[in-house]
Image (cartoon, rainbow, N blue to C red; front, side, top):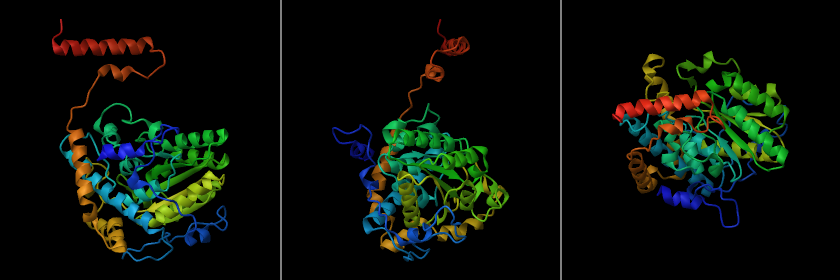
Length: 391
């Protein structure tokens, strides 16, 4: 199934070789939502609301102007597949097939809604927790997990999918994203860049530098902050005194939007408009998606040490999948067969032993290897030869 998706991503003859988004994530972006018209009246001066923007409430009822049904079904389908991907990757970690996995269960509306708002030429800069977003963008699942498997480099060609490598250091993807966006603007390329951050990343100096640089140089960037309320064991209340993280945008001279991060329709709508604004020369924005990290930080984290298990219960009731099940009158079983095929293919690929060439550790470090690097490579070869008993 993943091979079918990869085939559907290929650009048509005579065009760039860059793949398009897979068919199951391809949607038309509407631009006439009244919710955005009301908050875009004066974006540079408008403070975000304390109440998140919402189009679908926790009961699955529409409370605002929704995207068309085809978009809603694409969002629902991608969230269902994303949830299965999260669960499968967690199981693979327990089986020793992955070194670590940071789950985004409960955050699929952010992952899917923001990513589906991208156009073919746009770029995505993910964090380590954004594997569902990367798969939604069209990167094969096994390649998405390569880095978390402990293999070399990112596992996929960033230029082929317009997806930067998964970023583990907090917020360092921010300046990278702004740099690419600024370069594109100087070249006259009409594209936008979406960069994911967590709430903890906004406390880092790299985030400040990215926000400030983007605003000063009017870079076409949308910073999407998934506020899941925990930076590992540090709660949001010990990270920031701002009314919302979206309020930080005003200090940098750009608009900020506070969105219900468990409402995929609201996430998609707001991010779509922010990206369109960026492409048209309107500059950067910050969008905060208010959500919750249901699972531990990673498989090696023990949440019982810093939060009560009952804290997650209200958020389970606000599950983004349940909300769309009620809205559309269907549940995950509608995509069960497709999800089963995809996960079976992923398991088969992950059960293959990875090809490991120790010499690759020393490639691409310097254009011309230094004497010290050559000595280290030689020492490793000698150690491995001795372990094998080579003469």
